Length: 439
Image (spheres, rainbow, N blue to C red):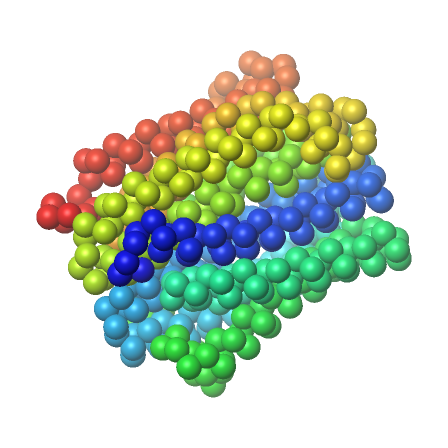
């Protein structure tokens, strides 16, 4: 990351991340496609209702993964082997603790949380079952994300891609077996997801144990090292809080969707699986620029930092405009994959019309936020994302939404909040003191 062509470095690092996230989103989408076609639209709605809660449960662990990744990338850039070793083993210990905690919490609080979200009676039992079973495999999810964060921080994103490919293959096979063939319903879909996450987790850990690189893992050394754990938490806490609060705002949005009934939930939930094919590559570019900036910032190569940011923005812009056009062009056939019901398809198409033309805003927002995080300044992006993607959304839901009689009042909230976040992030990037002036 600190030598050679900037465009090539970022592209070669980003592509495995993007493909990996697309694979992950693909097997999530396959879950919904199989559930929607073999179990029904109420089951499809149940998966959609559970998704925002799942993001809430893993939000803090994702922040810890970001914190560990920034520290590891900076220490690798500075060639500090001892601190790399300490960060790797401490981060995995943190992941184990968080994973077990989330497993217990998810199982216990599934029903109360779904009830508080106004989940319709005809959907709630399936949603509770799905969320409880999914929570049972949360440890694999959290540990894999941390292991992938270690690999990505080291510039080895190709490994993450291989392991996600294995997980996607496992998930699709198990979905077809448990849901389509054995008729295990929504519970079978959750079990299939857990098994696939276990595969990717174990493969990533096996590689980390066997690699001769500086980030090699020795199982006996996985423990909390106080000073390093405080550094990781301090670095990851802003992102973790940001993710949790944004997830809470998304739960409020989902509650609004739920008030329109099971068909609206099914349509919106299905589109959210499509939405991931735009959002996840954008966040991948953000992760790539965080690692790129972290290594070059640690190596004192500040000119490469600025050039890398511009190149990443351009890459994200081109991707989001292209995918937005494709989705709008083929919106009907894409939505029909999930469920043949015309009303379900109509709700999904309406969401597309509000989302697809504006994904490029998110590409700018996440690239700039990732770049600033790479220098160790994680609080400013957190504040900006909380204002735009959380506080503004809550204000909108409480004050503006009651004046809308249709679901469009919820859908339009997304691009408006993206615009506010992008504007604030651009202003901070230009005016804030996050990079030395000599850059």
